[in-house]
Length: 187
Image (cartoon, rainbow, N blue to C red; front, side):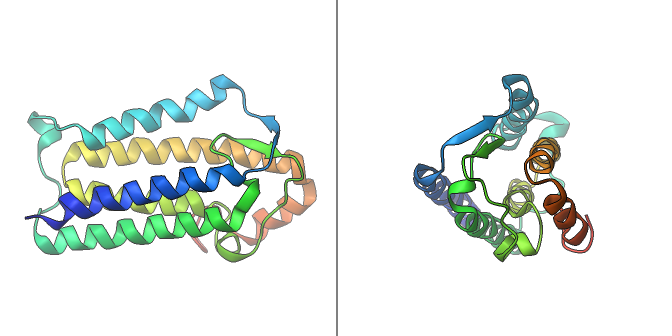
């Protein structure tokens, strides 16, 4: 039996359970992105997830990565590291977190923990985990889904950056100058 068939969904389910449980402690929303803005990243995330999850025949169903046990274990480790990093960042962000792009009442600019490494560690973790998931599936459809979802998260990041610049002004400008957005020392 392929360990990825059990462990990959189990990792994602555990992450989702934590994510929803942690959402109960969020602060009240002061300002939120409008629905058109929200759809601009939610719809591609949904499309990417469908590409990742639904089997296709033809070229999209062909393998880009081998389905060997070694590749599956590499994928599982990458997923676990990504989801773990995003969960740590979520914990660190505490009540300032929201699934939508928002400014919370009493919003704080968090610069410690994972936020000292990258400005958007939740997205870094998710992109890493999604990359691992694409490796686990190993099909071109999953790689395309990964690219679409990465684009959606980058789109959401751009919107968040605008909100944070408006909320924190010069303090956020300094943070941007000192800490990269997604990959330490790179981007």
